[in-house]
Image (cartoon, rainbow, N blue to C red; front, side, top):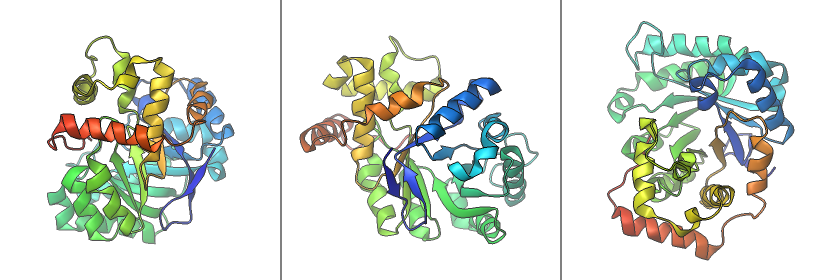
Length: 298
């Protein structure tokens, strides 16, 4: 699997990473997760991204692959209380959340610790950033990052303190292509694409029950891309190749609960980047339909 230099860090990340939200929220059993992650690592994936609020996700990762810690870069996030007795973004919460994550993940450090969808007004106060910087000084994380979108992300980039940015970018979420990614690249930041296939919401016959997917569902209905009428696998491949064709995207994190999915995902990239004509056609359709009024969806 292709690997790309991750900004100014010393990491070379696989273009496909594992997004661990689904295994937590869908309460995937430990045996399935072990098989899934072992298969992913064996297929060449070396990025695993999780968060403090993805239910048992961190614990599942720690229980199943902590013995292979040298085989992957481990990213997590902090900011939401997720069971701790503090308000979101309280500096004391962040400190306890970081230590809880390390314990759950069965590791002494993570490679990237990210502020999780932190609002700009909180960032401006500065104390949440200082907590991450102290964690870095103590060796609890090698690098620090920001996970978020729209003007919150733009402010975080302008702070000049973060090594990486995780942002929503896909066929249904293109604001970051012009707003934040170029600014992050100028800072030498690593770029992580989250929700890179827009949750493949077009696979549903009707609006999904999960409200988290409603924003993308509504957009995909309006965009009505021709290629989404093709075979589902081919459409997912085109969507994923679009995201990885965006200049500056280093890795795209995709979630699944299916152990054999990773080999299939890797095959979807065999065609390489989209042609200039395909890429621009998707961008042009987005600009036409969105009218500049669609912001990044966290």
